[in-house]
Image (tube, rainbow over all chains, first blue to last red; front, top):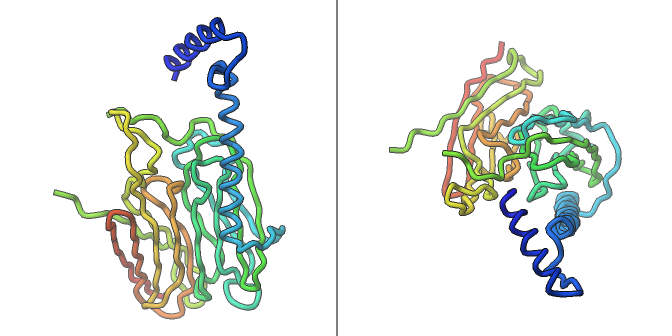
Length: 168
Length: 109
């Protein structure tokens, strides 16, 4: 990463000397990447909201008896244990039909969807997920009656899930 | 010379009639996210397990849709309520025709 930033700065300095007005493409490395982050955050948030809307079918997210267990500080984003438990039954009028997990700053927001049956007994699951950066993880339970209950947790990630080339 | 796919199914607790029994399963699979680059700088193509289907005595218990955000060697814990002894079957399916099935006998005590 460092060599690229250094060469970008050199290119930016030369361009700044040549042009009195900064062209959009000539912005400095720091502000350019900050602008890219803002753009990315908006795009990721939109994808995240769209994915949630696809799962909920447009139903609003309401608070309810759903619990999301995930560490608030994560050492290694490559494997983060996460557990979801919803105290409602898996059969009956207010049964939990499905539970989904979302992460709002991963390259893709979806993590997992679980569909239960009356034989499930409990709407409870656990898995291990990847987090590329500090972000908010959301668990949503879709009930048979069509409503959705949700909860979220903020997670700080120290070491991001592997986006770097592997060392062979 | 591909090795057979390995998986582990662990029943967490005594299996009692009408009581919830936790099932923990792990599958050996890289869950390549499609965002990593190899040593040549090229993106490694996405190669993930996409579904896990669980049946007990042939009846569907639960289904899971996994995405690239699931960590490698996907671990899933869920549960069910057995009313009889029988066979618990797990089936994983993924990209590039990946398929793996494993089962575990559940004996009620």
